[in-house]
Amino acid sequence: MPNLPGKKDIFLMGLWKDNPVLRQILGICSTLAVTNLMVNTLVMNVGLIFTVCMSSLTVSLLRNYTPMRIRMMVQTLIIASYVIIVDILIKAYMPDISEALGPYVALIITNCIIMGRCESFARHNPPGASLVDGLGMSLGYSLVLITIAIIREPLGFGTLLGLRILPEGFVHWTIMIMAPGAFFTLGFLVWIFKYFQPRFEDKEKK
Amino acid sequence: MKKQALSIVYMFLITLFFASLVSAVKFLNEAKIEANQIVKLQRIILKVLNIPVRETISNDDLTRLFTAQIKDIQTGGKILYIGYEEDGRTIRGYAVPVGGPGFWGPIEGMVGVTPDAAKVIALAFYKHNETPGLGGRITEDWFSDQFKGLPLYPIEGGQNIFYLTMEGTQKAANELDAITGATNTSSAVEVFLNQDLDYFLRELWGSIKEKE
Picture 1 (cartoon, helix red, strand yellow):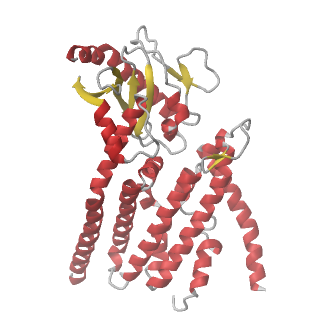
Picture 2 (picture 1 turned 90 degrees about the vertical axis):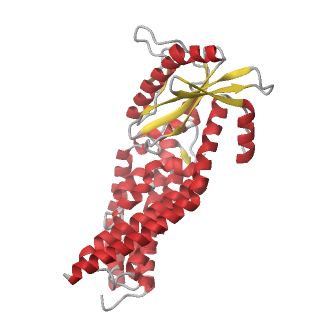
Picture 3 (picture 1 turned 60 degrees about the vertical axis):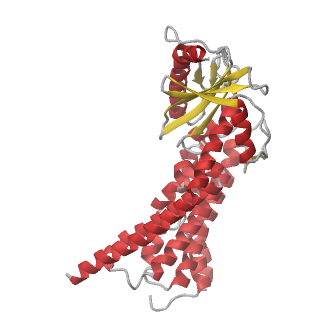
């Protein structure tokens, strides 16, 4: 990549134009799984932001030394190490949340966004740009998860962040708590995104 | 050939570095994680025996309260906890460990039982890997509160101590709400709780009485 775009463009690329969930359809597993409660969503986001940024940074720092044929092994090792560190820290300092998230923290390892960014960006680009790219992508992911949680938690439980926001008599949409509710919500979001995004891009070109 | 050797050395060094980093973080936090788990178990035992605990209590105070009012007793391969009133002599109830396979992994919990083993005082789960927001809701108050005051009697003629059924379809007092969307977790909880409570009533309770 000879002509590296500015840091602002890299950041916006992840946040919006090339959004990992809506555009690249990556990281769907955790998007569907944790978004029925806002608290879980937020912790998942923090965990992912940390892991993506740190992994991208580390892979980028090592990019000139890592032999090509073993690069994926090295990336997996780096990602796994950071995820385990996040898991240990949450267990030590936020035991309640670690309980609520159960196995999901450890499963951040399998989030395709992390390795995707290491493979497609960090291993060709300098550390600063890689860090910004990781931040943009993980914030883009977080934004989508928060949007889905804002739709699912109130409709499924009548609450947001555990606080009741819909009247007591509201009939909970149980489907919103379960996996199909996540699929429907995500499907609608991708639809809306795909509908509007080309128009934005056309405007920019003009 | 030289390239391959370099790859191996590189992988070895980088693994060494990251493994040391993770080990160091683990080592530095291990004591804290262990303490968290012990306090969590103590809190659960106090909760199922309905011993009031201040929301803001420090971990040290909680442990002090625990050692003052709770004694453990080993019987039938299980550790049970005897809860005493504040006078330290009258028995308030027993905390019985319960657990079994859940949908994703083992579930562990405690059930508080009255001194005459006639009723449940309260129930709480402290370890599980169920889906957050679905099966994970077994730790929520609305679920565990249903068990308060549940009458206990040994299982006879295939009649369970309690059943978990669909919300709003209850016909008898021992039919409680299952978790909507978590049928597998609900049935797992129903199976092991009935078994463990039955085992307590038949085997453990008698042997505790003898030991006292």
